[in-house]
Image (cartoon, rainbow, N blue to C red; front, side, top):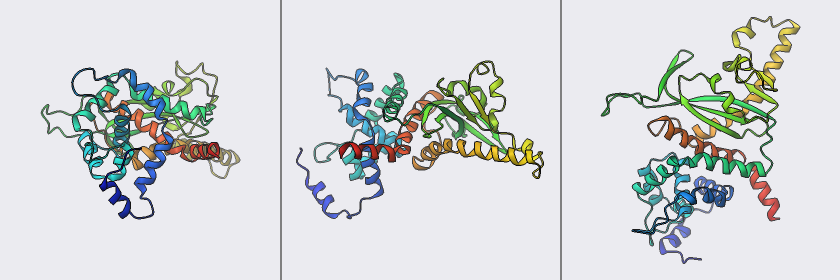
Length: 330
């Protein structure tokens, strides 16, 4: 146990008795994240520091990266946030009387290390491994969907051009410029098991095969995936396809007929199952405030998506995981 500093003692004395939302969230995150598994993924690629200044501890950098992802902070922003917030410093394990928060360059280099070796996808798989071990990944059915993430449309930059890997697409009567996050979600628990990033003009149906893990018996899709079961890469799959009927086609069926009533009941049932795919999008966009891409190019942003949805899975499974931990402790 390290002796706490005078500033920490003062903070403990003055803070209000009920914990802040940030403190509660970080305490839960501390308990939910399988730190040992994540450290094992990154350790083989982390610099050993045989020459020059010794590197910051790997666990501390992973904690900084988790803070950056959860609060949608830039490399500069996460340094400032940790310096300003005692709750974040406690989570990361920094005492300003002994050392400063990792600077912007250190955070940038760590993020580039993860991107270079494709480690964010492995971190995503490591967290999903914990969820599978806890019995939360049923793997009986998959729900696939996609959401548009906006990119800066401005051309007021050095190249006088928009990001060439981002594209525009129309949804309804509205045009969007950016990328798409395609996810495959477990139909029972609502946990994400596959993540793919593409340009916004990529049709959802083209990524269907990449979002399936191959063990599902049922696949649920919205009307944008109409005809997926006839595609060459999918027509031989032995699964039950639950694809929503297009709205115009459903409206054409008389409401007062028995067939119309049954069709509407069936579509309502499909929609209730597909609704679980919206929860990960809600966590990423509303809780983590990730509504616009932060980096240039699909590779960096897709790497970021893997970590976002990995942490979103922990948030979704929080109640079950904490209950299992409490049962084990008792």
